[in-house]
Amino acid sequence: MSHLICIHTVFIINAAYQYPPVLSLLPEVLQLPAAIPHWAE
Figure 1 (tube, rainbow, N blue to C red):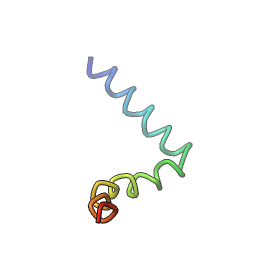
Figure 2: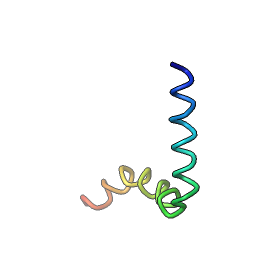
Figure 3: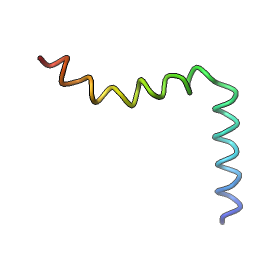
Figure 4: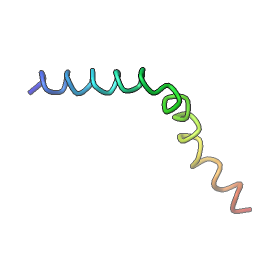
């Protein structure tokens, strides 16, 4: 079972290296919840 998880992790890392724009957008997505209260004002 752990072997399957290892393959899955490698696949995710592979995808992150192939699509850097997605990786660079991650911080902005994580900051969205913090920005929502400002939009509400």
